[in-house]
Amino acid sequence: MDERELAVRPIAYVRTNRRFKFDAPSQPELASEERNHIEFLPDDRLRAGLQDLEGFDRIWLISWFDRNTTWRPRVLPPRGPAKRRGVFSTRSPHRPNPIGLTAVTLFGIQGGVLEVGPLDLTDGTPILDVKPYLRTVDAHPESSLGWLESVQALESERAPYELELTVQAETELRWLLTHWHVDFTARAFSILARDPSPHRTRRILQLEENRYRIACGAWRMYFHLSESRVIVEEIEKGYSDETLNTPGNEEAIDREAQIAFHAWKHGGNAPA
Image (cartoon, rainbow, N blue to C red):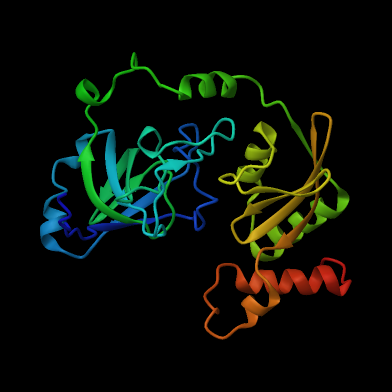
């Protein structure tokens, strides 16, 4: 078997507000008006290679899933029922070679920075290549979606669950937003409204009878179900006190916000 190693190097990096894998949707949210950037390395040859790209409305980003160190032959996609699929029938980042492929809208180029639309990548993701999107050869709308056909049909229907917040959860989320500009609700609520059942990839865990937890990056959201309603009970930090206070972990995402939130919530102080 040919086991040669091929050398690749980043030519650019993603610059976006999406810091966690949780923040990134499984596919770009086309209806979103968000803007992101692809920042090329300060290399004159790379910048020369961007000539004539600005005339294209969409481009392909070839990325490297640098946060993944292992791969699985069968994976659990975040969309649809909890059923494992062959990795090559999915867009899972857990691949033999962790290469990603994303089509994005190109809004403009300023120096060595591309301004692009919604994407499904996190901040700092290495970009290996950029190619123009060609509607004459890249678009095949009549093609079968395979096992995703049934998933698409279900997702086209109205989300079956409604979200409710307890006073405690609403107060805690407002405190995080007001004091630390932390807000993970859009992604979490979207997942829970569609299917709040336990699911490894969606990071939903059943803790006890009718009590569940969804991991939202550095944060945890606890909820229970009441018929067709998801009742969000409370919010908690995702890391232990030991982890947050261990020397060397100062760069943990939202570390200061988690320490402050824990002190506020369990110290009995009312929000300012």
